[in-house]
Image: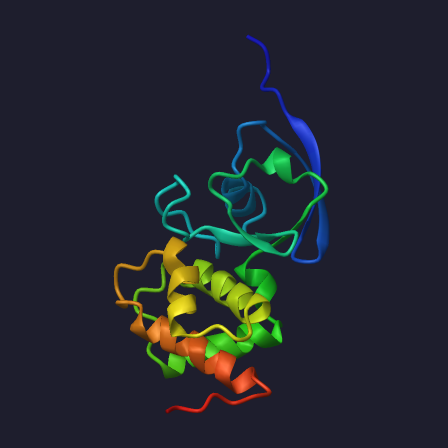
Amino acid sequence: MAGKTTLTIGIEVNGEQVTHAVEPRTSLADFLRDTLGLTGTNLGCEHGVCGACTVEIDGAPARSCITLAVACDGASVRTTEGLADDPVAEELRAAFKAHHALQCGYCTSGMLVTARDIVMRLPEADEARVRVELAGNLCRCTGYMGVVNAIVAVLAARSPHPRQDP
């Protein structure tokens, strides 16, 4: 019987260059969790629907469960562990706590990656836009109100033009 086929990939993960042999069918999520031990990236549906596995690939949120690790050869990947010292993520973690946006925590890592993207890409987003942007991240516990309020609070705190309520 022939050995398993592997390809060697080079990926920057959380600022560190990683070179590793992987099977072509290995998902990025499995590579991150099983090969690199970065278990902050959770697997939920494994179909790209729930958002629990969301990471940044070259600065944009992506579902790591439906992304092949070999497709990320030469890419820059940032997981929730890579957000440990990120000032925006720090603001979001504090806001998630203050607005009771955390319950079981399973979706939290994917929510934080998505929330950071919203704050960075859409600094003028209102509650309705935040809800649209979060549509790809499912949570069975919070009812989303705390998550939305946390993101809106961070957006408001970072805004040079505070919103005026009518």
